[in-house]
Amino acid sequence: MSLNWMAEKLRPYEPSIFATIGRLALENKCVNFGQGFPDFDGPRMVKDAACAAISEGHNQYAPLAGTPQIRQALAEKYKQINLDYDADSQISIFNGATQAMYAALTAIVNPGDEVIVFEPTYDTYNPIIEMNGGIPVPVRLHPPSFHFELQELRSAFSPRTRAIIINTPHNPSSRVFTQHELSDIRDLCLEFNCIAITDEVYEYLVFHTEHISIASLEGMSERTIIISSSAKTFALTGWKIGYALAPVAATEAMRRLHQYIAFAVSTPLQLGIARGIERIDTLLPAMIQRLKRKRTLMCNQLEELGFNVLRPQGTFFILADISKLTKLDDISFVRKLIESEVRVATIPVSVFYRDTQTAPKNYIRFCFAKKTSTIEKGLQQLQKIKDL
Image (cartoon, rainbow, N blue to C red; front, side, top):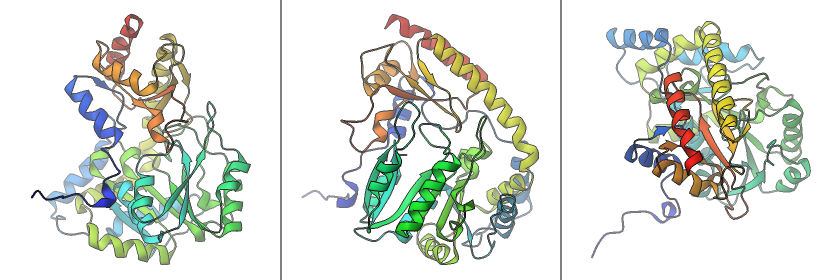
């Protein structure tokens, strides 16, 4: 008799779209505009600081909460937006923002609790909510502007609402929530006494607009868990240094869970990132300018190819409407781009919806955080869509 190794709670979940597209891209030798990682390296100063930490013998377990250096650097960083977090009791380091989100939701969600998520929804939120016995409640961001209707959001709240996840700058739509929108969300959180969990990993990657954390609005710091990451900020996704800033009681709950998952995060990499956060004002401007140029290059060229491009307000993703190019749905079109002579990998946006039958099926997502040579090669190969 064969053993059934997989627990019931895991069976509904297939491999993520990113794992699937990544595998197909490798198999078909594609230019990979799908997965959200840069193919260029992060700042030398940050890498040198991590290497120095290794050479100096900082190679044992870090404290469960994270090294004092990175937590203090984060505390100073958030003071710049008038958020006062105690480095010892309110800031914790995790193995990436995904683990921080897992810890936050697992720490606060009880069976039967409802958690509001905006659709399209980054693919890790719903499974974590459900595996903790919670119920995701989707609220649509309506294309092409990807805004929410206030009445629809209000209707999603109920006495069972435990939390709302706010991802801004938003992946995959690449829009940045306005202060007016965040104020509306704040008012509902206060009215229904619920927690805001923010996914702010693209907080610095904004273009011609401003990122605002809902925690900075009146009455919200005491009911908000901020989650972010150095991975996108410094183009060092493989380091997996994420963090959470939260009220003391929430921090204690997340740390209690963290001790049974990983306990500690890489010591020398934390010290490298701490150095980067201390120098963030000098490191980021040049990186943002480079990304702006890549954004413009890819947007312009995709438009010339016949895509209807939604120019991103934030993140390093571009959404493109394929309606003028094909009658195929987004999943079929993405598969064709990968397996045909085009050999370019992208992400279909309909997979980020709970109800795929009613999801828009005319958008695909491109990542432009790539070397200029990679972008140019991919755009050249995309010329072949005219022959499909």
